[in-house]
Image (tube, rainbow, N blue to C red; front, side):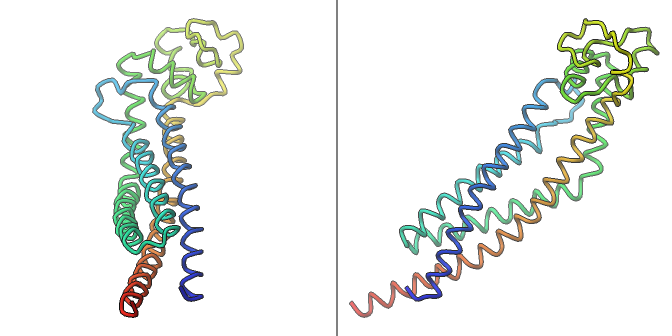
Length: 232
């Protein structure tokens, strides 16, 4: 192949290695989010907190598979495999664009749902789920430790960092400094959705560039193969 084609091959190979790493990072991020949210039930609220983490994990897996396929196709210099890789990159671009647009459009509504979810857990007296939230996110009560005082309950041990909810909080300063779980849970999702939407936008642009480069490389491979057949 010519010098230009060799450079394009090298660039695309490096890009796919970067995509492999990005795919692994997305899988790790989605898994961490799922792990943090799998400890408590949604208490029949109809709100599925696992939707975005599952989408992120699946998207990371797709990116990893497509990138691996691309690396192998470029290594074998196969026009057929590179063409298939180009098509998969385009499909991946569409999926990422849809997910990113959904996150941008529904961000405020989703954050409101997460706050309402914690409020519902408190209103339905699901103290087991509240204990898991307090342990996981370092919070206390719905809006603060005073929620327990207002209903005549002692502040649970999970508000002081103990695994046992029945333990006694002997240091008031600890639970008094902790924010409410509704605010903390919303903050968790706010931070993660910022990561998802901006990294998703960057990946969409990245995918589009890779799609154009891979398409050009595929045409170059097919032209070269056609030329060899004519000379043969």
